[in-house]
Figure: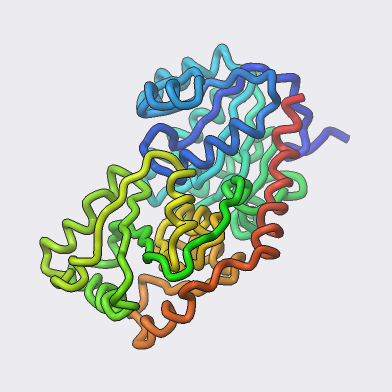
Length: 355
């Protein structure tokens, strides 16, 4: 019997092309890339799709190709001997249908050239359009090996035609080396992002709850995506949503690397995270955490961690301040963190097929 797509053998590979949302000054995707590079066989010399190619070349010493040019990335498939989609939710249409077509085209071109395609620690969806689901029904059977970061993604992949037993583990970023928490009585770190679920007035009840939360502590606004999150504090203040008292104890703190973000969180008394990887890196730093969910992937991670999670598409609970205050200075359970870290080992089974 021929092997299924999920278990198909992959030839020895030395020059993989790593496809992802890299070089976008997003700490979460930087963390995914760092974990993936550390997980590759030592002899691999990868090429990475990136917007800021100079940054990744300088930081990691890797060859890069401009991820914003489909032509350049398709050309990079030729000299590669495998294409690896490395973490995140690349196959979704909430960004745009064009984004999904971009990644699907890479799968088709790679397979047409006889190159193995690996999905490593991927999330799948949302796929809101019928055309998106049709496209993925054609793409998934072409994949040589795949692993998923959550059970919902694996179940959706199976419904759309993925073959073989699904490999499901935690988000690969859980694998980062932990930090020692030292934040008792420390500041509150906010991994907030702009979101369409909160219009101008939609922010008000959340910020009011924040203002009432331990008024003696400093608030550190930590942008995880430089182009999207940076300046959020100033924007909210300019819209009259942040009063003088809250503004007086708030400041934005910009860091360059995921490890710097973890160290900041390790010195905090609480991290309130909207960003998925803000939640994961803060928990890996041992910090007390609570999630604000704009997307099901955040809710799934919070459920796995066992931390409070409040959906942003619902009215803010009247007892929100009380819920957050109950999390103060109560760090993540080390046993849960070990379990989540161990759950990422399944993704190695995909990379092991590189030989």
